[in-house]
Amino acid sequence: MYHVELEQFEGPLDLLLFFVRRDEVDVYDIPIARITDEFLDYVRLMEEIDLDGGGDFIYMAALLVRIKARMLLPQEEDEEKEAEEDPRRELVERLMEYVRFKEASEQLSTRRARRAARFTRGNAAGPEEERWGEREDVEIDASVYDLIDALGGILIDEPEEEEPSFDVEPFEHTVEEQQEFVLREVRSGRRTAFRALVRGESDAFVIATFLAVLELARQRQVRLLLEEGAASSFFVESRSLEERSPEEPLPQEPETLTNGASNGHAGA
Image (cartoon, rainbow, N blue to C red):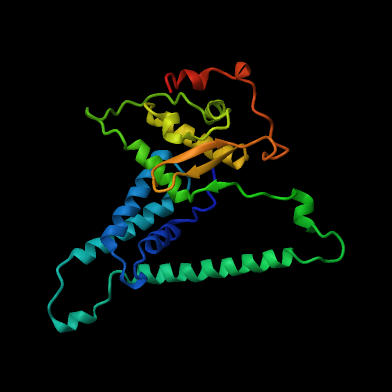
């Protein structure tokens, strides 16, 4: 199984916090029905693309469904029941605790960055930089939520006209093959919409290409750009030779590449 680590995707509470901040809702008065539906959509998408760590999200989804069910139960009119505990209380407490830890982590990261900027006696680079070398951030002009949202929009863009088939088909596209395919498509340096790269292809092709694009971005061979005003679309752009990491190999010439990815994407 190919593993891609999405550093911005820190867990189910981080996703909940994203929903709360995006919708600008009061954390103590969470619209549980809407948040639950949005959370379940992401869980289904994670199962579709087989991301690691889905167990924590499934547990949180079950908790949200339970809270939603309790919120839908008829309320007692007895005044004594007014003091009954809000079903969302446990969720709010966990979310607020997560916020406190997240803010503390950000403060520690800020302090670490400030200390790293100071000059000390001896090797100024420090033991970590001396061992591993300088690390560069991957340039992605979009959050991981935007990218997953775009992928979900592509996978469900064309509804099935027939009954879904339960036949298991062999996986024909590897991530390595799709990396070569993407590099060929963006070799000219122009921006290419991800949707155009996978138009008319199977879900397996779309998912393999999506993972290939993330890996190429990690290797600093391409950059990902979100289309302004369109959350369901992003572009892939080849980086110049000067921008690429020195240790990354140059893309192979087209005639030396395998034909696996191009055969699976005829007519793209």
